Structure formats: structure tokens, C-alpha cells
Length: 84
Image (tube, rainbow, N blue to C red):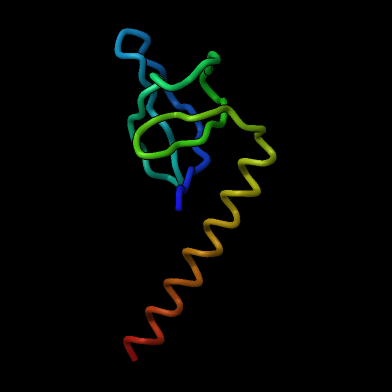
């Protein structure tokens, strides 16, 4: 199963062909080597194993991020229940 995470472009390094992304509050660097279209600061993209795969609509990205946050919260609650 492949999982691509919506992330917001924070900065771009054209020399290294990479970007810094904000993924659920975590900053990470990703390669643009697989991208066919230009990305700009503020764009939302799909991140998969260190590579930007595609640009996505901001509304769609935010909806997906809300879903990820709900899943993480649910997992945390389950873990707390198992610890008690």
C-alpha cells in the first residue's frame, strides 16, 4: 500500500531541486526530481518516500490532513486504553 501525505511547500532550493515541506507540523526536505510541473511556496503537494509526487488543490489537501489528524488522535486514544 502506498501512502502519499499532503504537505505545504515552505521553501524551495532550485540548486538541489528540493523543497522544505510542512507535513502536519513536521518540517522535512523532499526531492522534486519526479515532478513535471513547477511548485511555488504555499502550494500543497503529495509527499511519498521523500519525493514530491504531484500538486494538489488546497481544499483537498486540508480535508486529507484533517482526516490524518483524526486517525492519529484515534490511534493515540486506543494506545492509552491499552496502557490502562
